[in-house]
Amino acid sequence: MSRTKCGDPTSIGFTGQGTDRPAEYTHRGSPRYDITPRPLSSYPCFVFDLDGTLWLDEHVLTGAHQLFRSLTRHGHKILVYTNNTRHSHNEVHSKLQRLGLGLAANCIYTGSSLLGRALNRYGIQETFVVGTSSLKCEIQRSGVLVLDDPKVPIDVLTIGLETGFDDSSLANIVRIANQDTLIFCGNRDRDFPTSTGPKIGSGRIVAQIESALGSRHITVIGKPSVFGIQALAQDHHLQPRDIMFIGDNYDSDIAMAKEYGCDSLFVAPPTPGRTPLPTTTLIAIIERLEHSHEST
Image 1 (tube, rainbow, N blue to C red):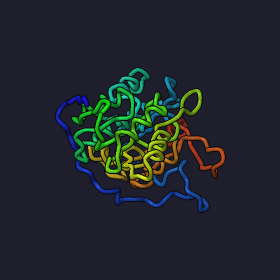
Image 2 (spheres, one colour):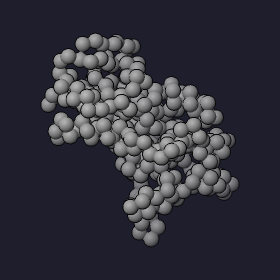
Image 3 (cartoon, helix red, strand yellow):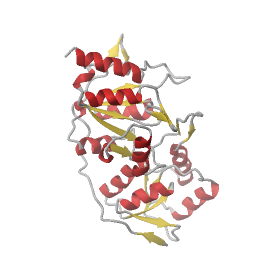
């Protein structure tokens, strides 16, 4: 069993769920996620998802640059929070810079970096990781030992997206895990949006492992868990009412915002087969933001 040790661990104070939870904003009795109960100018901080919200692969979506400029001009804080466990915090930071959506490093929250942060929060010292080399490096940077091909049962398993995960990978997990193994995962997203259509997400790997190991408790760190938004709120001294979350996935982005108690805007088109939910666009958000500031 080989191990790689990295720097000193850091931890966060884990706070409870938001207590300033607003009621759903409704129209004729139906929940609305395309409009907000308060003027947009009243939210000090806007938090954005990335894939499908601000970009698809290397393509910045219409209105993203303009909305960032408008928010900056009016003094709003901008943060991003993605469930992406494929890439490291530094890789996402570099992509934002390259695509003209530059933010300071401490304004970026990724599924990979939050997994490392959470493992430290829970006092985990070592883990076997299903995921990319970027995820493994991110966890190592958090101060947690990453086990390479362990020959003994593992105490902790951490699951991200691994594109080469196959039957032999699953068989290895069954071999090294036992009923006492603690399991953490970045998210349960079954797919994620790209410019050529949805691609398989880490949620399918989680489901495979869950089925192979039997009914197990798996601690989800990313959206819709509130761990990440609590972390960014603590880092930036924010309360739930200070935050407007904007995302394209109802089951992760909007569900997380509802659970935490902050308002949200849904920018994805309705999902086929599901009762259509009202959605908005980045351009519409810009127009309402500017009108809100003009009216104050």
